Image 1 (cartoon, rainbow over the protein chains, first blue to last red):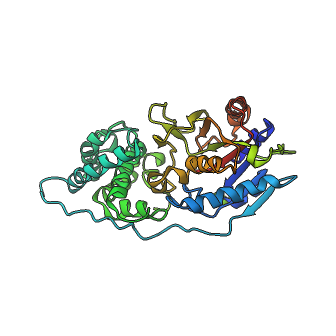
Image 2: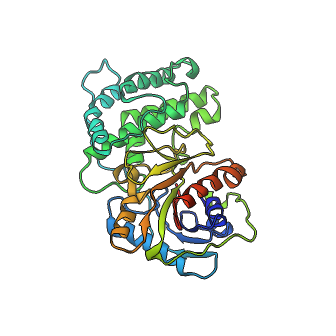
Length: 227
Length: 141
């Protein structure tokens, strides 16, 4: 991002960067940077908060008044990640003959459909579509049960892309089911990995691939680094 | 730590002059790997960019890292791509106008950022210049 600021300035376009890592903006001499200590993935800070987003932008545009740079100013408000999972109850499995995660994913389908209808897009689709959730989860369970990960029938073969699709499906559905304002940064992540059957299955299969001697990229990026 | 990662060094960086804000045409440039559903997806380490039409809202966040929050974007695209805020600022006369097209790159780039510096970055800048853009708001992911 900081590189792009220099490239655009060189082309004659004035830039205002909403910087998310202060030391990088400083060391890279970003021409005009507003350092915003907000959750990564939320450069404008607060989803759904029009006044706050506008304030961030206007503080950034104010840096255009500087006659020379680099200029690095801190936004006065700090927004931290949430360690607690968002509130979204997932019903218990009913049929014990079926993998709990498969029933859970099916139960979320109507909410996910509403999300796609409302937003006009979805992040699901790198490896599978929503219709493929059940088969994907069964493949992950095979790995946990001892099948070598390359022989488990992982759709698309790339574990990290598959997990992206599963997690995104869950998070998109959860935002439709949860009441009130958008959850804090990482609260949806905590909900997925800690409270859903699918998230627990992802973590178990991640551990199994590691134990099987699978390459680091194949299992490590199935979850955020801190997990 | 992200804060200690090695960074490219730029000597004597340019500092472009901007017209008064009320006369400036503003574009968003994001590193969230946003694209419209109909666009090609970003690959891992993709150095190319996608142009995003001013009216597009069917946006997909194609960034490959699992290490950041996506739920904010799912709830409100403006928390990454504040296009509705720019439209409001233009309607209020605070900025001169909203660019007809905006730019999206992938944030996870090869460490030397050579292609970005020498090829795709300048190409994107030229497209914005052709659209009359004076000011760019960079939003990182």
